[in-house]
Length: 115
Image (tube, rainbow, N blue to C red; front, side, top):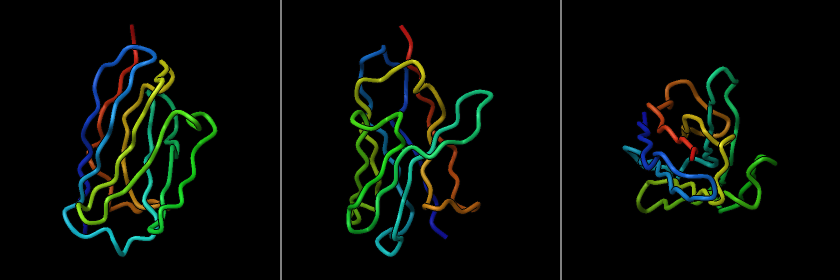
């Protein structure tokens, strides 16, 4: 089973940018859809963006126009470019298949947007 490791989070000021990476221990080329999810304190897990093997992507309304998901099957990595960050983007970000599977959750990466 593929293990997923998220990285790239940190503390950023409102309006700033971060690029998250999700590195897989094995091939993701056979996985049709991958997604980024996030969970803010006291809130439910939210689907942020998905991308299929053909490159088709979808976004939550709250991040459309600001976030971009991409995948590099050769590197077994999924990315999330986050621009124009807002305080409400503060959360732990996870990647997983779409729809998610229990055994694929990683440790996540913390994103904090604050001045």
